[in-house]
Length: 250
Ligand code: SAH
Image 1 (cartoon, rainbow, N blue to C red):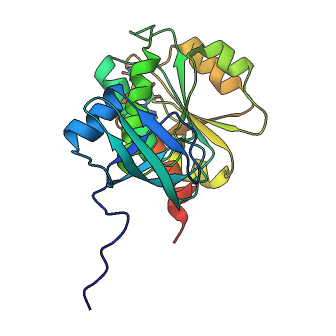
Image 2: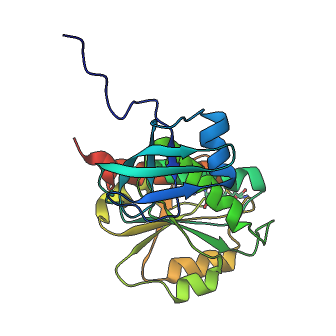
């Protein structure tokens, strides 16, 4: 007997949509998403596409109507429930364009729940294009199989972040001047967490003092070398995921 081909096919395109998904829901797309499905992925009537909206899990949707610039799909089966995202925030100072984009992409792939841009004194960039950052988060989520997008928060100043810090969330502070070795710090502080990583120029002494004085802060060392901000963000997030996050599931 011939083997039944897998459905949905592994090659099915995977796309984030703003429309709420559910059994029988119809999704009409135009613009870039339609161009991607119709012209790039050559989706035809009857083909299957995987859709997710960030809150209803992932759905297999069948193309019902395909035109040059728009496409209509119907959700026929849920393929995955919405995931439980580990409760980890990455608080990162803005850095140059390509490098902050890299942080967004990797934060999404690694599993962060929230990306919180934080403005610090030595930041060389003081404005962020949140739409562009969000597009990077969406693209990474489509590619890595996430069913929930990381939340992208508005940029806040460091003093505001510290003042409004929620109770019960540990603020691991990546301090290039030294701190507790990361593996030990994480073992000592399980539970809700965030990592704070500085800009290219690091934190200034007053900022360092203010952070260290905060009751939730735990200064952490990422080793003897000075890492670039994006390397520090990726390394800190990876280590937290491996030791305290969802990479621990067998
Ligand atoms: N210009 C600074 C370095 C900034 S590195 C200097 O020369 O001292 C950018 C950010 O990455 C830092 O603010 C810190 O948050 C993080 N970082 C880099 N290396 C680190 C290390 N070895 N331990 C902890 N944090 C580090």
